[in-house]
Every structure is written in structure tokens, then in C-alpha cells.
Length: 209
Ligand code: PRP
Ligand code: URA
Image (tube, rainbow, N blue to C red; front, side, top):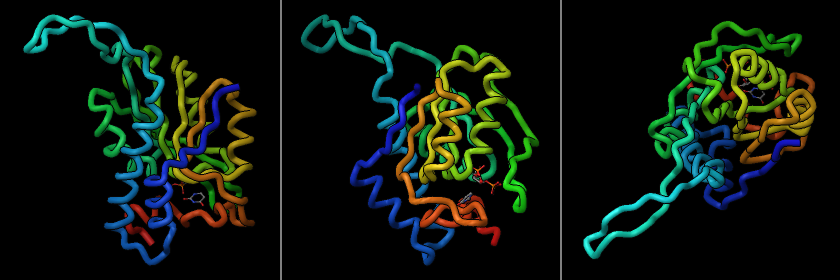
């Protein structure tokens, strides 16, 4: 079974509380999601492999550590995942960006895939799938299906808020992937929204409601 981790760094928790507040403006919401994503990138890249390199300091030659160069891809699930890309790419600047478009039917809560565009060498990359909300898990499961179908093997899923139902469903469907979230909330309500959650992440990011 892959890892499941709640990233409870105080700065992440503090900023998450700010965006849960329904009075937060679209501008503030977007800025804070960006900041949290940078902090999450720091946490989820903790186990990146290092290698020895020889460098020359002003004092002399020395063997030091450098990231061993596994290629990385950040793959947002559209739309809301887009809000997490720039923040993560700040710490992972050489990452390639893929896109998976998906929307949830409001009645059935089932996702529909409408767009997939990934780096051609996705099978060689460490993939960070980003989406602020892991609710029923349907979108995440379908996104990981789409990635695996195209050869991706090393996949991590990063969300801001997860419902226990979504974590369970994603773990059952894809036991090999690691799941990171800034918060594990109480439950889903009858409309498929996470409680207490932060509302509709896409609408809050883009001001579409
Ligand atoms: C939201 C969210 C996730 C999905 C989570 O997207 O960003 O992708 O719902 O729900 P699930 O775990 O039950 O599948 P939405 O379908 O609202 O699309 P949007 O990002 O375009 O607003
Ligand atoms: N999608 C959202 O944007 N918010 C939720 O609470 C659930 C799904």
C-alpha cells in the first residue's frame, strides 16, 4: 500500500484555515492556494534521491549532494488543479506540466474526462497529480487511470482537502500510489461536497460563481 500522509506543518494548516473562510476573496484564495502548494512541494519532495557530485568551493574540491535528476511532471486535474501548479513549480522548476481535464456531473457525481495532454516521456517521470479536492475520489481515480494507461508508474496524488470516502476509494483503486493532503476532513454531504471543506474549489479559484 502506498503512503497516506496529512501534511500538518503549522504554516500549511494556518493558510488552509484562511481559505476555508467563505469571506476570502477570489484574489486572496488564489494567492493562498499558490503559497500552500509551494509548502506542499517542499514536503512531498522530501524523499527525492540525491547523488554525490564533486564541486570546487573557494577553499578547495569537495564531494557534495545534488538531486539525482529523476525527471518530474506536475499534472493538474482541470480546472481546480491549475491553482496548485505555479506554487509547486516554484520549487520544482524543471518539472514538465501535463493536463487532465475532468468534470463531475452534479447529479451522479461521476467524472467525465474531456482532455489529456502529457509529456511524451511520462513513463520515466515522477508524477505529482494535483487537485485541491479529493471528494468521492472518482476524478482522482480516473486521472490515475489515464496516467497509467499512458505508461506512468511513479505517481503521487496531492490535495488540499480530502474526505475519508475519497481516500479509501483511491487507495482501493490504486494501492500503489502515495496520497498527500493538507487536511483529512469529516465526511461528504449529500451533494458530494466535503464537510467542512472549502466549497467549490474551481469556482472559488476562478470566481465563476
Ligand atoms: C472538483 C475538484 C475535483 C473533483 C473532486 O472538480 O476539483 O476534480 O471535483 O470530486 P470527486 O473526488 O468526487 O471526483 P469539478 O468537477 O467541480 O470541476 P472544476 O475543477 O472544473 O470546477
Ligand atoms: N469539489 C469541490 O470543489 N469541492 C468539494 O467539496 C467537493 C468536490
